[in-house]
Length: 265
Image (tube, rainbow, N blue to C red; front, side, top):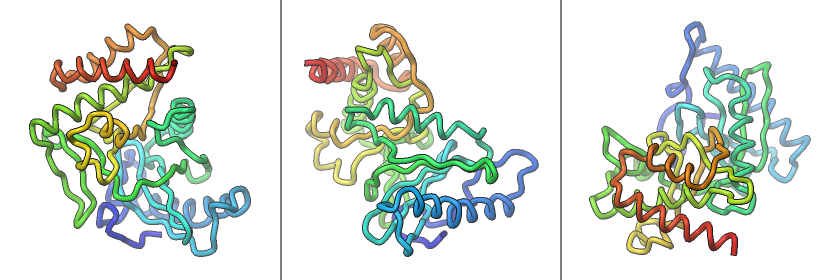
């Protein structure tokens, strides 16, 4: 299961497990192995034969405080698997899956899940999404905003000042664009530090074009949704993105609002 490839972190998944007091690393490794290699793969074979093959490979590529991330390669196509951290309360991953399905409905800005599977016997849950080859996770490192780049080795690259401005504008616009004016539902608990946003590999080609960069950015996390008015949602964005330059947020609000109007027209 843990065969390595130059797609992400060149290490083993259990190094990045977050455990509660009393949880034993070796036991958690065994649980993950049995869940992934047997339980989940059997579930695919029985319920989703289009995703299954006898030559399935599952490789660790990344991690976060909520989930450990893998690539599933069935020999024909690759998919992303997000498995809850061993210390996560069972059901949290299903909640995020449901939220992403809601946000992803008729919304290409969200990497919407393809399927969910969980087994309380192993205290493991997983959902599968489309795979973006060597996508860059946007995040902070020591208060510096940048992206984690998988090749030629996994490392962090800070944005220069002008690129940081446009990234802050586009993240703001992306969050606002997810607001549904009919249901009054938007994204809550968005976290730049946790890699909730990714950029497609060739995003640097579009750094001088806000609209193209907007299309290159995807939302991959939705821990919680919120049901509030648009004005209150905008206030929430200003509050949550306090690290951003206020002028960039202003521009992002204008861009995001134009995207909302485009959807409703």
